[in-house]
Length: 103
Image (cartoon, rainbow, N blue to C red):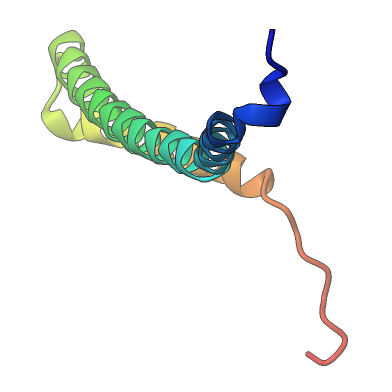
């Protein structure tokens, strides 16, 4: 039986070249594809979430308009108060940056 390493150097070089190409592809292209998928699905999820939020606000305004027998301004006042309260709550949770020495 002939020794594989002694006479089959062409196939060894081809195997090593294939292994090198696979390693380079795994280190570069596969990571770029994963990052691109993450960006695309993240943007898609953000757009769908924003659309759902807009539809939810429209449904809430219409539901309040049907529930309250007054004019529409009362519905707008209630929704404005809810959004203002949510905004104030989120504003109170934001990070406060320390004052800079030069400012």
